[in-house]
Image (cartoon, each protein chain N blue to C red):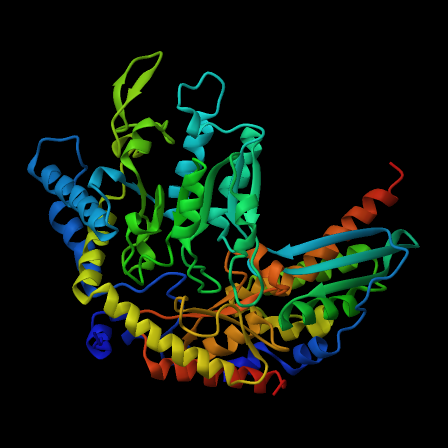
Length: 423
Length: 153
């Protein structure tokens, strides 16, 4: 399963451009957002040029075509993650909104007078469990839900620079008070792939729900919601070759049926009276207002694109780049890698510190050489604090990256060290 | 190469050997400012003194973590501002702010900005402007607080 990178690169028009005075672009920031292949760009253009209309609410031909494009994307997204059927797929604007959807739905279930089943209701004494390596998107919504309901937030700590969750605390953390466990599948900083199934089984044994942030895994490897044992799973289009503005929240249908809605508005209703309304069945119950229709068409094209290449092949290619990157970076004096030092059990996002050179300054020197990386805490401030790191530089790889680009990264880091006279 | 225009030698000098670093007691006001994108932070203390018709900046001390631009900028700022009447120091601050907003088109007045003209290149890099402003904004905030607490009305 080897991947023809030269051919793949031809699909991505942006990789032809130059940056910072004529240098080839070396894009190592795909964990932030990925680049888009011609096939996805064409799908967006084709939608706007040929099929643009609002969905579900008109009887004309364009609306039928637009609805087919939108609902077709739902079917593809469901198949992509092994969902039972497409009614379990809710489109959101991104994964942050998907996680907030669950958090606000549980919050709505928890208000006085709510008719929602007890498993969705939170109050003082109940606990939500997260991990210390969460992206702020899978942390802050739960902090806010705890503030609203009086529930308590607890978390798995990270054992150290090897980037593993400390599972010895699982028996204490996941108990009869636990209502929800929310965790990241693959860390956006450490690359660590967490033992989601093991934690999900423990959560289910005490009747808790499990939400998985799969923003960094779904674009890079085959993911099955059934195998993970998730109740909810979120990912976002723009990290998997698709457009911005659309994400997916998958949820088990029996749960979605009983959960109260998040946003109210058009299209999410069954009947509306001045005093009250009843709601459409899932997924429409959770999709208020005009949705990102063209973006759904773009996401469908991205799913087709990745499926045709094969996620196994993408993953194998990234593992090769990752192994090379870990070796190259570890060989530089003064560079310390956050997270596992070998490709096993981790994805292709590599964060590192360079002794004596701040990440902003590292990334500035890299940028000067046309190399795009991310610097900062990568929306995982508590993780950086836990590791005693103020900020880090992150290089992340995708199907269009090459071994030569990894070498350029290593050379760029050495140049940063020389420029700031620490090597 | 563009890097030298961004990282002028004077910036690298201040980064390696920052001036007025280390917190002093007593002080009139203390603030802590953070750059939320990277976690860079500065804790900064200001002491004012009576100097004729208006107060002047008697002392600035700080503790800071951050990139070369943010560290050099706060260091240069202390050199420029300590000893000046508050209103004059505020004018320098506004001049620096204007330079940072100039998108590389600014023509900084060395008589006003002194060593801070070295940061002109930063204004071409939108992601770095916040770094350069971190210490200045902390000083402005701390001084405003010190003025309020020292004002008997």
